[in-house]
Length: 232
Image (cartoon, rainbow, N blue to C red):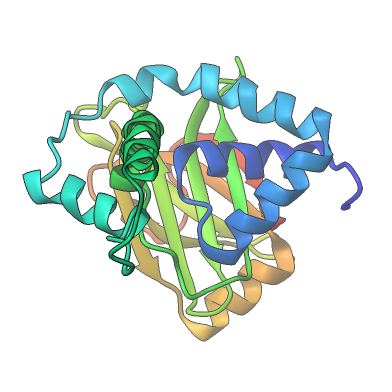
């Protein structure tokens, strides 16, 4: 079991609840969560904080044939011809019971992204002064990608954008991208040098800039937020 690290746990818990923690990393986190009551409390905290975001997701009706496919995979037809009638009735009872559980599971399957091939990376959660989550960020060391998910509470400013900066160990900021807002998600590719520097400094900042980003290549507006990337 990993030692407790509050900032890392908070970032991982928020990634888990939002759904951007994927693949083997998600499975490791779920195993770790079973061992740590404190980590479970942090997950519950994010579930309550992000519940308004879940309510904004549009409803999706699964295809009619999906239920038949699920049933066939769970309960394939018996090969033997001498199955007793009582066993058949019991089978239908378990099909009905399992269907209730599958109704809840299907919602998770619909909204969970496909697992990523990457199993290593760093995550960060940008919060306001009131500890309100604003952006969730996930950087993959395997393919040099950076994914940014804005929470619905992040509003677009007329004529202005939020710009993300990588803070080098030397203190010089490097522009990475203009950030998404209002629940949108953005994924960018980092250069080899950017990925290397990101893993070294782990420090990011967000400034308020003119529409389209800073015209000078350096922050021109106020720096509103700082965050630190942690391993998962």
